[in-house]
Length: 263
Image (cartoon, rainbow, N blue to C red):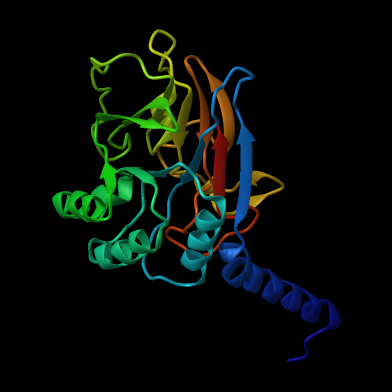
């Protein structure tokens, strides 16, 4: 069989694309920053959004994430679901949380924590052991740099049973953040009466494989959302492309993402 020059070129191009999609882009972190602070804000605080880590081992990508978080020195870290996708991955999560710099860390559930049959009580205990909080249809209020913050964390809309908890009985927080893994939950939601400073989601992976910004596929629960910011009734929603991979260990045109917000 004679392989023609055009065929050789095509095979070489395919090999380059495959190498890039499996070895380069999945560990090439994109760090985006948004400033939402108003002119009358007293002391700005920073919130770092991580989603869809899909932790299976503590490798190059995970080490790069830890290095980025350490360099950023955020006041709050929000993990918006699919942190692990295997019931056996709790030790890896422990290793990851132990490496995180000491900061206020809050997490919510994703579809894979449900689908993989993760022991949710053990998961919550693992977070607590490392001074992090797993929120499932619950609020957490605290102060950061003299400013009051309330984070509402919902169960995942694709595999769980999300329900907004009743408003906190304490005084209204200056900054309110809502985290829900699957962004389709926000479709048709009118949060205008309650309102949130910032809403956070993930799940879509930005398609994980996208051509010219258009994903070839998105998982159930994505709704109309792909990635980026969306102004909704009652909140500004950020949908992260996430960090890890699901189903196939590849990324193309949808680099793993870490996002920092200054409020």
